[in-house]
Image (cartoon, rainbow, N blue to C red; front, side, top):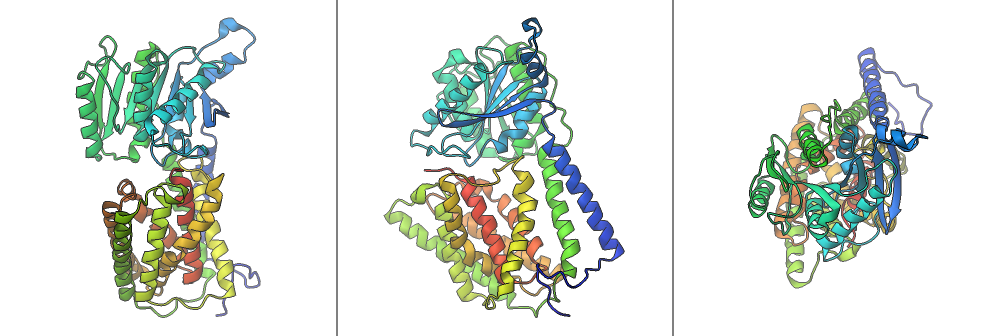
Length: 509
């Protein structure tokens, strides 16, 4: 059978009936997901503004939005305002589901990109908590100047790093803050008097943050009960969630809504949004992979002979070990955190470069790249882009890096390319369950390598919180490019994916 490139349209593609049905079902799921996520505002007025360098998404609920444009002021319905602040490596997009749940319940919501994150080009400063608290209060000012929003104190909700920002804002400007919800809380100088109405929420599967929440509650005077006179204090542990999944927990939404409703003395319904946005995005991701896997076998040639996969796994382990040792020794001599203008990402990219170089040296050699690899790489990048950022930008991550992040994307792709090509070369050849078994082994080895690096290298410790996501992200990439069996095309696509994640995820320094 002759080889078919992505640009070759001469050979007709034949898809069997079962495969065709699977492809049609996957396409239907993709359309449904786009419909649900793109039309997710439920009538809320959504605008984006920038104030003092802080980008802010505003969501005003339908009742307030309609009243704000009504001719009669007597019909106005002013919605209480809530600022929602993301955590370290977060963005407005990550907090969108939380903001929509609050808007559905009748609150006007402002979601800022905090300093160093998302579209905010101001670097994350050394006095991070105070600077971030000012960003939060800037968003509160935007709320107070918005038609249809109740003037006066606002509610603040923050996750992880953002929890420290909202608690600090509540301490610095108590007259402007009616209530605070700290999700996966870090720390702040709370007292029994301030901040006003403090609710602490942590996930059952993030014990360190549960301990933080209990310590904060004790320093804030202990629990008062939801019906106590202000300032109220309460702590709740959300079952079955950890540091990231708590952001998509209906229980977290409902507890936050009830807390703010009591503080503002308004009636508010629980979230009740059905399948959360992240659920639709996951279905979309799986459907894109299934659709591609249904079509890919008729586009590619038979698999090549199996390569030395065992040697590749050994190369992955030795590469991770060598990179960790080199950077740990270097970190003992010079300050590595923050070099390259970002936190975490440049250091992780260099780690991947070192690990990938050793992996290629120890493991199987990739074939010489050919011209057709360019076409296949472009097609694989397109599939991954549709699967991840195309719809994901409405749910959890920005689609494209802006400002200084754009050129960093190119640098990161180049740095992680050797590691990505080594990964693709190691998985050349195995089929079916054998390929899955090799990938599980390789995923365990690579995840362990990331875990050791995060625990040893100063500046990579934040990776500990992302460890559950790393094998999931790589599994998506492997599932997309494994049928193609072209290491350079697959490696390039994986490098673009990882480079994109590094460029948009971590804060500017």
